[in-house]
Image 1: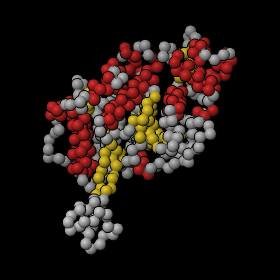
Image 2: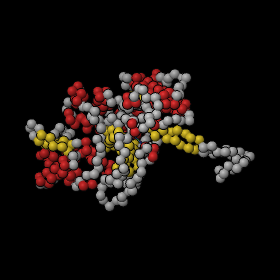
Image 3: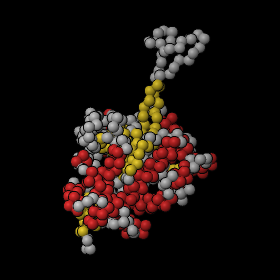
Image 4: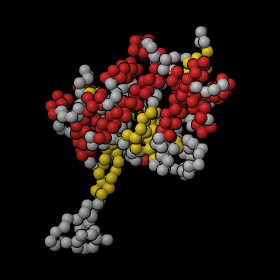
Length: 414
Ligand code: ADP
Ligand code: MG
């Protein structure tokens, strides 16, 4: 579902009130009866509310549903998107929305900008895009939530991803900086890098391979398994650094030479590949009944990818789950549970993901894949559409300075 921000600046304060009322009403009502919307919105005079309702319905933020007993409205994904965007806008986390840079099975990714023009990433979780029917038929945990379940599950995914990203960042793991979470969305820092999937060759596959496997082991030593540790979810940044010559008795220079004269050694810049790990809604604790399976799957993903893409295979077996959990120290799985993403929530989300088989991008890679795609856009994880930037689509029409349309970093190939 595309995020269409066109109507956002035309909503009046009363429209927002009514939209919020529909959201509140849908906590207990699959279809929110019109009188309840009026009551929650607390606006004087019924006609005002009706006017708001019809303008919200016209732009697709709420939808009219006719029921056997009564008529009412339900919030749409568009409506939920607007409520989340409005929260991010009020907190000065998002000022404008740019291009879509990714579309997964269960999420949409946009580049956004803060009011100071800082580029960030907005991830909108869209669970239920695949099918809720099977889930609904089989799971009693959804019994009372019925059609609201897509909203609830998407919110759980965002809550979980934000909680884990925060805990990982705080403990020094290479992940984006989590900035804010509202409803089914999170705002995080933009990582200016390619997914590993789009990299044809690297100078030192052994180095990056070792680093990635060490990360899997390190995660386990903090009580966690990523669960979807693959070439789509590892962004690789190329960092160039020029070595500083050592100070010696014979070479007491304190500044770098402007040019490589005969006496000074040539300064070969070294290129380091710095990985950043993303995508955390499927993370599991090392206490999960299938923890060893998920751990091995993460390891296998990296091994298979390095062998196919870079023709690199290691002589060393493992790492093995049993060894990785021998030295568990601080438990981030426990920390996250205490921070608000409860065990009950984790179970609900887990059951949903299992039911729809939405356990990551790994399945998208295709088994026969062994070379670099000619067209990276053909990736399931690659941008679905590359439209000219509509970056100037600001969220508010106030007198804040408009920011210039900004080009996306070329790494996205747009
Ligand atoms: P999904 O759950 O749909 O796989 P991801 O979180 O993996 O969502 O994001 C999908 C794609 O969006 C990634 O493969 C990456 O190209 C891009 N992306 C996501 N987060 C960021 C970020 N913080 N910085 C840069 N690109 C990102
Ligand atoms: Mg992903």
